Image (cartoon, rainbow, N blue to C red):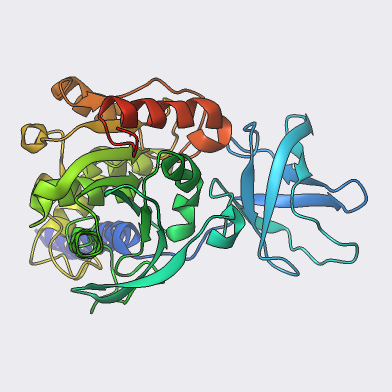
Length: 384
């Protein structure tokens, strides 16, 4: 009996430590999901040839993609543009620099590869003006690219990004005569910070987009098309079913969208070696009012409400989904499921190879053509 008591005395603290360790992991995973993070370095600069204006990067599934891209750097430059691949092997990719890098410049090795390409509205050489959108979160900065149509496009960037992510779409949309309002939203580093400073994954951010719709309607818009990138797609979808202005929403364009967060978070967990039940426990913690704040959220995350495959019947406007089979970050499965659930309103052209929010970079011609054809088909262009 004494040995049994001794075994129990040893086992109870061990079980307590195990449960505490699991709880720590679960809450840590939850915090990563909802906490805005600094831009991560995902590749290394191995060499820069300022004479030839070339740059050599560590090879990754992103850096090996053909097309035009951007690279966040530290040192003399904060951002450089990249062009064609000139050579590559199993570990290295050498690309043409499209930003002039002067001799003697200091560029540190860690870098962040991305698809934004344009970093400022001035690079588009189009008329634009800065505006402020009065939202429930406070004044949210936006860029307005005016045009003649009374159908406005409101663009919404993704998680961990800024308005600059959306600039790629402005030229093709404006070529169709459509004004562009490129917006920010709470906790994105440009718009005001909410009390807790965390993402709600679209559950509250849509209110800032609703304010942008009101702004557009007050300034000459008769209807709007929402264009969302990645998490911006989740925000656009929430606005489409929740906005007081939803009758003015005439269509949605979604690039690499989050349509169902559970699918995305389970996929991302697997990619980083985190296996069930940890992702499920983390989502349960985020969705419970009792544990949401411990997990970093201001309020419980309503994953059921954010599942737009389950809510597909509530959608009532034409939707264009641009999503590569090889996204690598937000799996295409939920986009396909939404297209299958609502073939009457969803158009989803097939794209491959391009990774997350990089279809424009990899295949600008077909990406532009898909948007142009959809706008014409649904009579959104200024000429219709």
